[in-house]
Image (cartoon, rainbow, N blue to C red):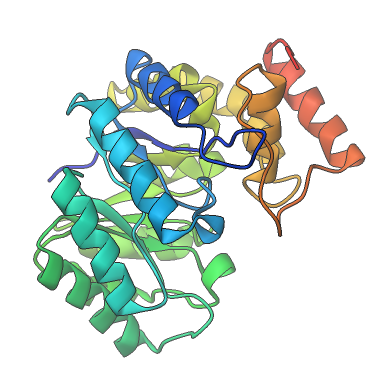
Length: 295
């Protein structure tokens, strides 16, 4: 399975009653498909997976898969720091028709490198579905070392890695040694172009929730060899990418979506509404990009 292009880390919309807004979620899926996004990644960090119940988690996956109707790849997050729990969620995703799954490194329990290897290998082997490994040490407290990624690259069904370590040296080394077997996607919007430049294949993006077209222009320009255009779009997008992290993701992107008229509801505790200073910075970045506020 080849992974290439722009994939959207889909936000989970909530109603005023703090329930999943199923109609809005379907609307978001259609928007993404109309804009040419290569795939959708629901139930990840941006989708607030930590505060979704497992029933809600499964419902979101089911809705997105059905709404997509095979027009784009759907790669839901089904990871957990409990391997058995991750297997159960992954098997559900396979059952309802997901194309692949995104498995985050086990968080809080901080497994050894051997534990990481066995975790990902077990899920990929038992569930028999393409797996994208998600390396985000800032969230999980553990980094997938290059030596471990090399071992994982030879495991059947492990097809990709979402890299959000922020370490371009590590990314370069992993791509150099593993890219023949797996595709690397940026997990940081601001590092999309740098990762492409060292051999990456695309991005799983936060900003694509509301500006998917512009991000696609960057990635497409790179693969067409138009570096001048790719660099220009990178520079234009960069302030927006930075603004998505003025507070913990997904607080800023949810605020941005609401300001742009999407009405996706409030974040769930322990996430809180965006602070005044952070909101000012976010508004400046969105207006600087040329986006019009509606809310």
